Length: 205
Image 1 (cartoon, one colour):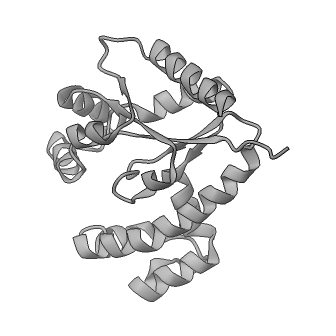
Image 2 (cartoon, one colour):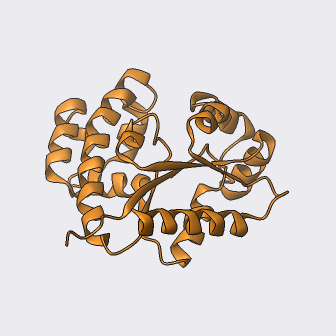
């Protein structure tokens, strides 16, 4: 008998929506979580193929003498140029996709896994998933959370970053499931409802 594959569930949301908190709740239920954003940073520091591609695209200064990713250089010479950001994403996202598929194979015994990513739709990663959860919250509440979490940011900077992201209503329109993190509705019951749904879908497949 062929072993079932775990359902591949994505979770995303705009900056300050609280998707990482929601992911941690799923994790406490025993669900494996792949943090795509953290793993992308790891790959930029450790994946030799990706490191070579970044050096070729942006110069040897992209990495320090010890081989670590030169974030200061990249922030100054890449992240302020929209076209260069697109180029960087075109290098990083495919490697993250490969890494995710390898990771996913280790959790076949789980009913489902969670792939957490800020750019799930923008990177077209959603196409390889069985369903996508979008975490939503009102704009002003998101800004308040970000300023409390990241005291080095100004409100103007925060609004500028959010303005460059895919609008929340567009993310919500593309979602299969929504979790409202607006402080008017408890998060845990919403997570438990989806946990039950995904587990049943796996068992019935």
